[in-house]
Image: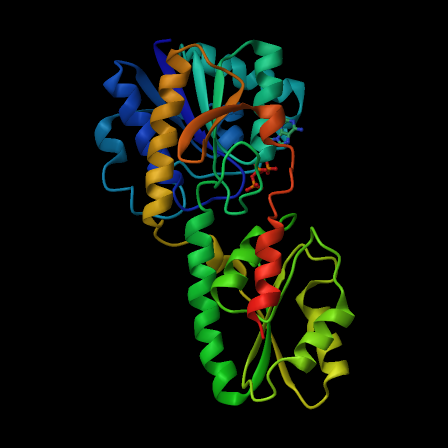
Length: 321
Ligand code: ATP
């Protein structure tokens, strides 16, 4: 392997820049030529591939988003699109790729390897933490800290006005953002797509909780079967005397300076990915499990294994007295 390329794909996540920086600099350290592909697989299909040097990734470790930009590419989903992508990388002599993204990104990478025999390794870049093969994905720690900061602020208002706030947080298929941010903000209840909502239990809990509580926070994952609006309406119906408000946090959860944890995670996995390629690895995602770098085949990493820890769901209930 002499020439490698790195790309970011799917939704952006804080820490992707730290990952790009780590790949570029580890490549150079190992005497490789490193290219950057702009706008994910779309740039691979359209040939938007630029050489990177050590300076091109200076002063980016602290920036959210991705300097290479990211996109969703319909063309890459077709064989013709992937063939075009292969011709573009061959023209530049690129012999291996590192892709930073989520399950869609790894599914696309698996097809590309199968059809064109290109070595590819992946790094988990998604705020949702919904990949197997790593305890945490790049971007998750920053996102939950952003949520915690926002909920703390909402709690001040809720407390001052004796209000109930239903707060919808990101997580289309996964309640991991909701669960951890719920525990760390002292939420009275957390609703997530992995678990069926027991409304009766929640209403009883709200009713039985300390009568003198002046604020109540319910965190709802966006992928919950009903969503924040319906939950807020149901609470209003049950407790007409409560002043119930809905707040949807939205895209603020994606952006911002990556946390120290995300920068270190991305840096470690970037180094591991380049070294993994040089050792002959392919078709795997680099992840961190119990503090150790481990490689997991793409087809296992994308399985939405249930990362919801029952102890965490129990904690919400126990501590909301
Ligand atoms: P996030 O978790 O942030 O959504 P993701 O990697 O899952 O990240 P997707 O938009 O699902 O994001 O996938 C990224 C890109 O991967 C798609 O735009 C597409 O180009 C490619 N891709 C996804 N699924 C496939 C597939 N079945 N075959 C080929 N390519 C695919």
